Image (cartoon, rainbow, N blue to C red; front, top):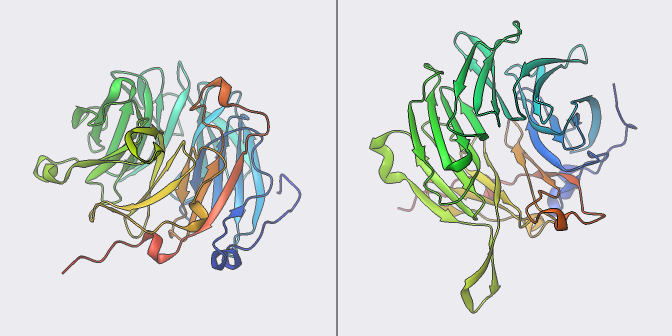
Amino acid sequence: MSFFSASTSNSLVNNAAADKDIEVADPPTDSISSLSFSPTADYLAVGSWDNNVRIYEVGANGQTQGKAMYGHQGPVLNVCWNKDGSKILSGGADNAGRMFDVTTGQSSQVAQHDAPIRVVRWIESPQGGVLATGSWDKTIKYWDLRTPNPVSTVQLPERCYTMDVVYPLMVVGTAERHILVFNLANPTTPFKTLVSPLKWQTRVVSCFPSANGFAAGSIEGRVAIQYVEEKDASNNFSFKCHRRDQMPANKDQSLVYAVNDISFHPVHGTFSTCGSDGTINFWDKDARTRLKASPAFEQAPGPIPCTTFNRSGTIFAYAVSYDWSKGHSGMTPGHPNKLMLHACKDEEVKRKPAKR
């Protein structure tokens, strides 16, 4: 079922040659909060402050078609898929977690908190699939979708701002810079807790695909690379990004922007950062270097709140929306609200070869 006219956008392949990214037709009507590709096909779930989740099908040439849409009773803050791509999970400011069944086209409530659900993640364990929800009510709850009550609840030191899972690793970032690391073999007790190595509020945590560490981004244009085990601690480091020199001659005057999202490439293990400055960078954490930037990424016409790779790492989706980084005054009429697709080239996402 198409929820819009069957409009299609341009071809990704043709545009790749011209270094132009494709704008998805019929985007959400308010700021985009979250993006997630299905793990089994090129379907993109998009959560928005307009209270809806939209699902787009992305064709081989980047043409897109709206396939389905379902609603919350408040802004949608996060979306994810289950392992087999048959269900979309979402959390919102209505304190509810909802599930959309792709085969039946029906949505239902599957989770409830006492405050907005900031983040949802699907956990595929040997015992089966579970939904984890992190909320501003200072809890994480685990849900077996067949039963109405949570399987268990974990108290957090503060409001949950961000969470990521690469089984068996789960990392949670809260207000006041607390970071909790879980081994999901024991999901109710943190394996370790730490204060973020970054001095300012945590905006995003993202687990390494190898599940032995995570990247954290803060509102102060900085990313930390953190390994879980003490034996790897010598590999921990942080770096500045998403900054702009106000006056090139005076390095103390740089403008500093929030790091809004970090997405790891599913094949190469490199990662992207995006920021309130409207830029995207790709990085190789092992070589501690920035990779070649695409000309398409030079400067978006607004902040970039969220990003994601498709399952093969050939398509990179990103949103251009107001992220409230400048408060109420930044919400100008006609602010761009776009959903973009970028065809990844090897030199942008492949690791640097080791120096001999």
